[in-house]
View 1 (cartoon, rainbow, N blue to C red):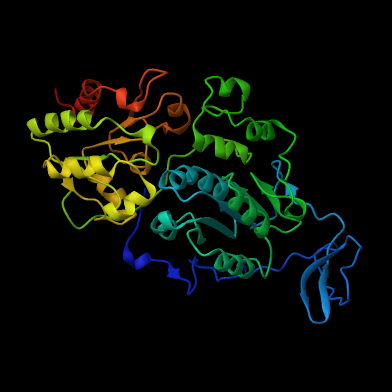
View 2: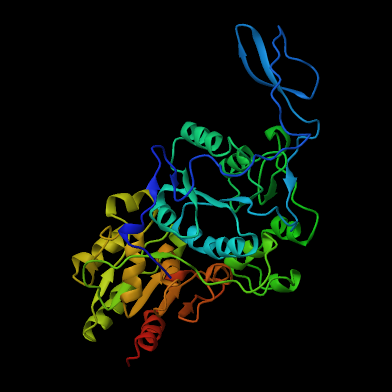
Length: 417
């Protein structure tokens, strides 16, 4: 667990990114030189040149302005190659809290293997407090949340003095694939989804067993480790590491933590989730919380501020009902994300549906009871020994998990009858 205090706060950029010890551009290293490097050759004419090695970059009153590119300009697939010393690496990811957390084993293993000069993270506004306070990240940018025109400028600035040696993209969205390609140079290795030559189609996945896994996408399959023997588990955090050709033990989550100023209840719960089928039945929450109340155990509700929660998550009406009934202390929006981690560390147990809070808790030593969709648990339940996983029957939904089962699991976590 990484401890964070205000004295170690990174310096914010005047734009949307931030820097720790690095400037906005990738500097302090000699720019890559190659006989095939892109060399501008400004040519003006009345019509678009037909030679395929000339690519238009704009049109003004003098005609088309072009830049000369190498004939083979498709991007390069990464297949486990060694990189040069002190390489520049970027990771592109979704900005859901859980997605950030499950990427931290990958960040640790990239740092361990390559000792990069710069490890940059293109995430989003929702996880910004984790990004800017993480000791795993040298430069961060809220790709999901910043205006796209500002993103284009940030990419140009960050890559102006040199290109990335490796980009690992963990997202399939068109925007993530576009930005991955924009961050790339024709000598950059790319791992994960990206657009390819000219942005007209996807860059083909590699023709090996990692490419097979990217193409498969049936990652909740029970026989995933049999189909892909290089996987030790079906956990998504490990999958990301193996897809990047990283070997060895997969480390635990590593998260920034800050001690909250106020006292923390015995048990912290999180009831909201990104999808309706992740939610637990309101009556089950009430039954379980009444049991905790009867045992004299205090409970705090963790989540986003109610107004913001409605934008990204489901289940705010259940939260409001639990607060109104006096079953929980309302801590929604009270803490920064590093403080949420600190609060989870100091609680006696965490009880949550499959959401970002559950993943943050799995980065601590606190006992957790997590409610997961059947099958999805194989992919998203972290292999933390502190986590007790509850699932419904194979064809049922999370709401059918009984309060009786949850109470038994919480009793074991709290060591009470």
